[in-house]
Image (cartoon, rainbow, N blue to C red; front, side, top):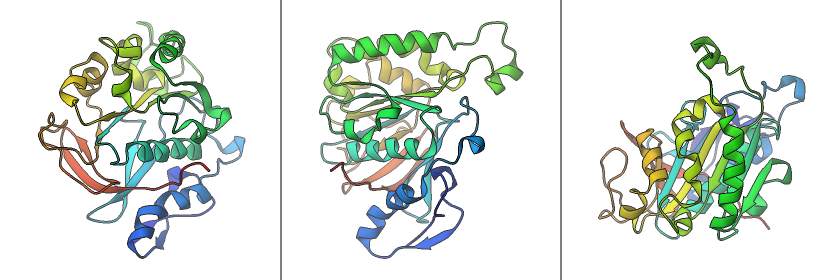
Length: 284
């Protein structure tokens, strides 16, 4: 099984040189082992400006060509993850967090982690923590504060299309709101994230990203709540792990299916790509 890796460079360069791994266990675990060794942030003078779009991160290996499957936060600012209990949702979030950290400096990316089960807190280095919330009330307070900051980045009528492309009217890090067990936080209509609904379609302009994992069970309820619905309306890709086919259809209209843990389909409006999600070890 081959995929492309180069040691000593950031995660955004994975794919430039070919390495070989053999065996199913290596297939499942090798991707982020290499990223952990290779994902060192370059010196400050080599870093892009803080308003860089992105980053582009690997999610795993495609089941057909065994090449890295990427999610580019520069072109698709959000990502949702859906699956049964034990299907690999938290492991996928762990991979995504570590990939963001490998690709960006703390000046380029900050993470607001909402984690009711507290399984990811130690994955986010202190320097990258915008905040941590383990309950809906705590999340609501931190979301309100971050929303106020992001609103100040929203372009006014005086911002030309050329400046929109440059994103030169604000400076600061990309803001990632990473949510595990989203369905556990829904105590009322829009949960603790209602203040952010209006910002979801403008995310690319203001450096805002939501990465949200939710249970497949009861998806007919969660897909109707405002935040999930706005993400779908914004064509947010879905990383669909194992789930019953009788739940709500995915973004492309297809039904979910039963899969081994760690196997998924990256779904867009145009179709889907099967993959094995990259593995990273849990914190000690």
